[in-house]
Length: 114
Image 1: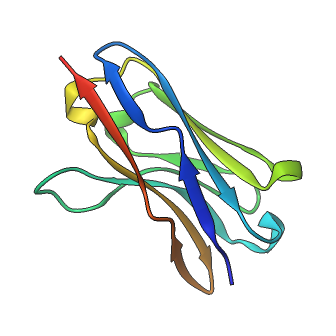
Image 2: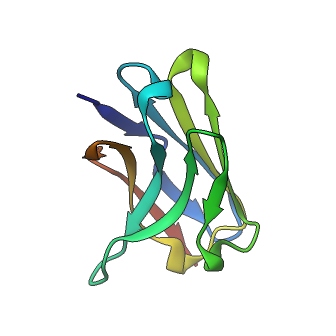
């Protein structure tokens, strides 16, 4: 079983930056795919960025170089560096891990003011 705990959300002005963290229990080497999704008010949850066990990354088209996913295997932690934030980035950001089934954190709220 995998447990995920997100942190780092908050209120930021447009153009600002935030770094989200996701601490995973257990060894991340056992996880097939890990990454971030977000859910904005009234919208479906959508992919932000992921990486697979080989380290290959995948980003949503709308990220356009603004966000970077990274990991620290020693700390069992995945990060999402978000730069040039826009009001439309306002959402609850969820950490996800695929290890047989999908595991989700409880989410962290990011609010970008204009």
